[in-house]
Length: 248
Image (cartoon, rainbow, N blue to C red; front, side):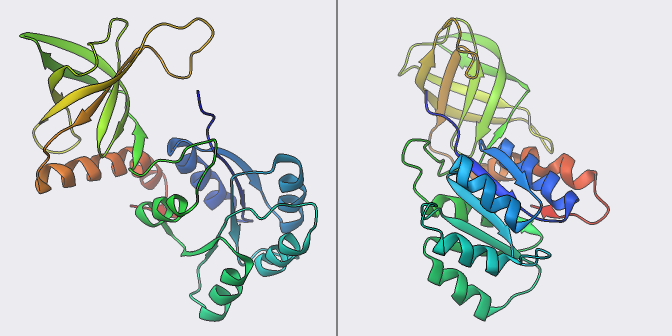
């Protein structure tokens, strides 16, 4: 099974660091926090992450100085970087681009923009997902082969759902999935089982179950799924903050 991509994120704002780390974890990334540019550099030397997220306005060694140090260090490979700042500055953006694989995002972070920036980078062995995906811990009704099954959700994306089940339906089985959304009536979608996993001793990150790909979604259905996934990712984060640092 592929490992999750690793992100080292450097920011001296503890609230931003905490909530951004929660969001990235839910987006299926392992997260290592750093509070200074020097701490980030030392961490990168040891961990060699897949992506770096770096605040432009770090104290002592600022983000651009940190970026330049990373660029000139012979013992550090060229790692994709996402620079973040509360100020739009084209000169800073051009300096970031000169580094190599780099993106520049404004604070507060928008889920879709962060996801899009991450998809620019190719994770050789760790994958990377084209569609937003979130942990999903609701019971889902599945109609298939004249029967109705109640399954517990594991995760939900814009394109499908993974459901826990010790005896999954065979690959290729057409199904109808009824999703309980946060707002409005439950959403009924047609789909197909595209992947199954049985019980494997010693492997617990992915529980036994089945992945279902949604088929023939209309625009309204796709919009409702996207909104739901976004709320699963950040809804509680927004509720906990008076001034959100990560918003949908």
